[in-house]
Image 1 (cartoon, helix red, strand yellow):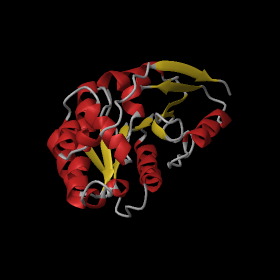
Image 2 (image 1 turned 30 degrees about the horizontal axis):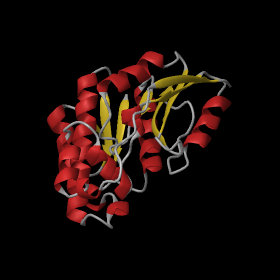
Image 3 (image 1 turned 45 degrees about the vertical axis):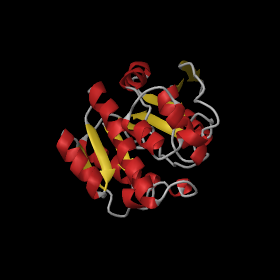
Image 4 (image 1 turned 90 degrees about the vertical axis):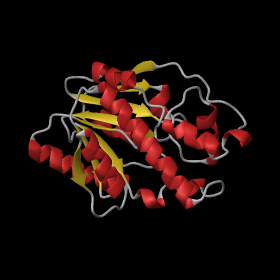
Amino acid sequence: MILVPVKDLANAKQRLSPMLTQSARTELAHAMLRDVLEAVTEFGGDEVSLVTSDSFAIELAASQGFGVIRDDSNLSETDAIDVATRVCESRGVESTLVIPADIPLIKASEIAMIYRNAPQMGSVLIPAHDGRGTNAILRRPAALFPLRFGNDSFVPHLAAAKATGKPCVVLSLAGIGFDIDTPEDLRQLALASGNKRSQLVARRLGALETARRPVSAVEDSIVTAKS
């Protein structure tokens, strides 16, 4: 199952407050979620559930035929995925792929690459572009090891994956690796090629005018982590 955790979008992206009002940040968050779900829909290779209590996200899931796993505590991405993982286990779900809602440049082909390279039992990790965070993670079986998201989650996740003794594949994927947290990220989103909803919003909100550099091209690569 593909799990997309979505926190309260009415208070989204506080780190962008130096350049955007809260209403603009919420508009951007809505657009990014739509972009992510568009790629997931285009992929179409697995069941999808949004892990959320946000009303916009719930309505969007219903309109696209996706499931919803309620996260009424709305504490953190880590807590939401803990809840969702338990639900998946209870349903006999074989694998979980966690994809965040703030990676708008994600491509359906990248999701397909994750599944194509996933071991029969083991994991696939996709680091953030800075190498610190984890922007997507597949576990097979669904609860192979616990997830703990944050700014420096990749190294702990890699260690936890290796500790299972199962194969762990690390993929560097440009679209999935690019998340939006800071004003500079937003500027790069505005400059990147393409016309996704979130890019049009970023450009309209003025991110392009103060952009310093475009998103650097990142070659998709595959590394097998030895346990």
